[in-house]
Image (cartoon, rainbow, N blue to C red; front, side, top):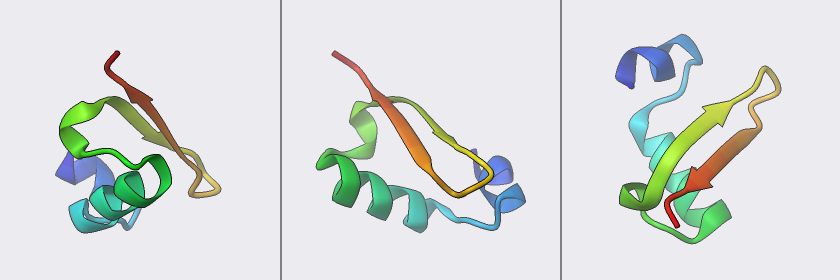
Length: 47
């Protein structure tokens, strides 16, 4: 995960912060998170 974040010039703190603020959940509840070329974060949660 850290390698992929580094390639997008983001870090784990950025990811956790955005998931908590945008989705009001913790990282442990995330099944898949993607980021597109426009820095739009898409998150899929466990049911």
